[in-house]
Length: 220
Image (cartoon, rainbow, N blue to C red; front, side, top):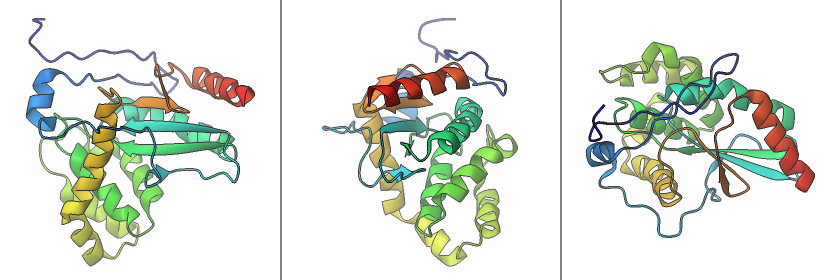
């Protein structure tokens, strides 16, 4: 394959459910989808406004994931993250940050959909809904806005408020804020994890991820 073509690199071994692949953000992709997004000058893995899946009273460790809801690798690692936060949610803060990848037709729309749901206190529900149904809409070439609206209705959202938030430029700006931090931190693809502020190689299995968390907790 010639060097100027988009490169896809598979860096994950399969979980029982399969941990998928890691898509590099090649220069051609940046030109197509992120050229107008500048990296944050003082990028941070997590901010006060970042969405947290767990909020332990005494957090001993913070795990941050930059993700793309349309990314198959993110969809594959999702069950492992869910299992880990169920097991360690009382000790570890799990944080989600948006990083929709260029080339995924509905990735940015999916991020705005989740952010619009978050405005009505349904972040976690929509986050889970999009991953649970990823096989139904991922990799589509047409917009899935109608389907995402159906999901919003199923979650009981106020649809007028949802529509307003979905189309509000501030919602897109919120997604881009996460992207700017990600770019500033050197994120090139999804999923990318940070543990207590340090980027890690994506664990190849649930067991490896669990061991990494145990080691972090032991260091205290």
